[in-house]
Length: 125
Image (cartoon, rainbow, N blue to C red; front, side, top):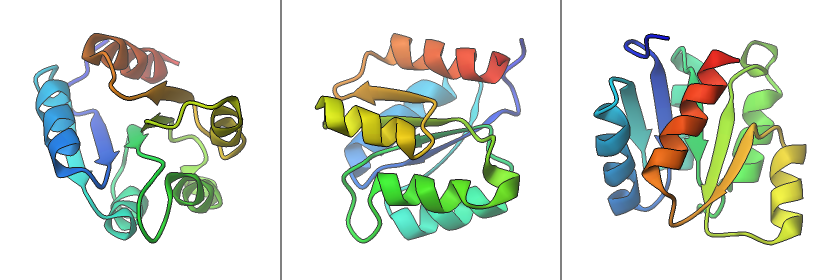
């Protein structure tokens, strides 16, 4: 499968994490959009034709769970695959993530190769 022109949106309030992910995912040929502000990310997700969303859970103002719930409440955004990428790794956190519509739940620090593989899997489905 060709991954060029596939848009990946990264929303994480940690600028270092965001820049690292943007660099590593971009090297794979994806078009990467990113922001450190949840409200901006929600607007980008609504406005852009996003193929995969990578989302932190613990963010100020709008946490990742609520972000996902808001996004998935829009009928034309129901099918956007969401990967939660977070330091929260309790069973309850993972369950909440899936309840909110996550396609995958991964914990930080993430192995970039595994993350890239997960993105590819989601794009193929």
